[in-house]
Length: 345
Image 1 (cartoon, rainbow, N blue to C red):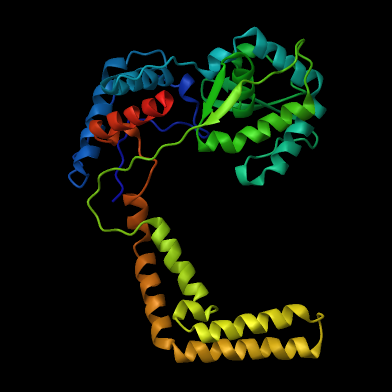
Image 2: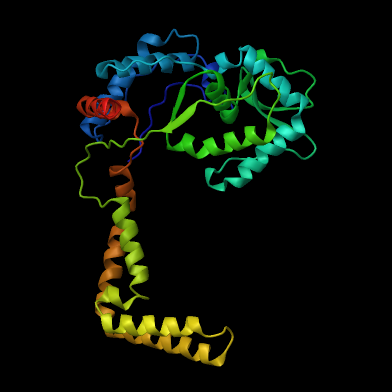
């Protein structure tokens, strides 16, 4: 089941304004989540208790940040916080924005080329036809807006860096070691290629801090016999491959015959009658194997279908992206201990 916990009585405009521009909220009482696993129910209560004392924070972003500090206190984790809007008030950000405006075509051309070279990151290229969109946001009380090179005035006081601009500035001037998760690691090559190709003139060479990728998995203790997503994928692949690989059905003699036919086909020139004849012989062999082992094939396909029918349940039980306050505190402490042990090693 899916349940929601509304934190405000008003619906934000679309697109929703960033949390830095939204007021803090007085969290309403929690609904009765009688179907929730106990640790998740306890975690939601902790979230509520952490948000409530900070309802007077200057923004929703500040409220959530302070609540996170509270939620991390049982595991003795402390970290400094830095808002993107704070970065936008630095001299370095101002110099970066001027370099973008003065060299907009080359800046955005290099950006879009880097995005195109890494399609798996699924980043959107910047607009470059007619108007040249810069990797910045303009913030207003009700929304964030794209920024274009031809805008009459770009007042850095009302700007914020987009993701790649923010990581570029922080890795250049904000740290000695940049630690990122798997998502950040997917974007990182785009940022580095963008800067390497653009080479903005900022009065000093851009030397980025070293980067490391860190990831950890902790799951909620949900009592279920749901299969793992990996098991579902493996069963689906087996059902597909078993129709084409006799060895998976235990017919090793037919598997050897198939391999011999494949080798003979590969050795022949394309578009020849002999090759076509062997190809048809191969498929006749596979049809014979499927008929001979129809019972086992049906069993494999039933097992795959049964696991596939539980895919939604598996996604819930094995999700690794639940917010950390929903985890039992013992699991949080164990994770912190594991991380510290890795550094000590």
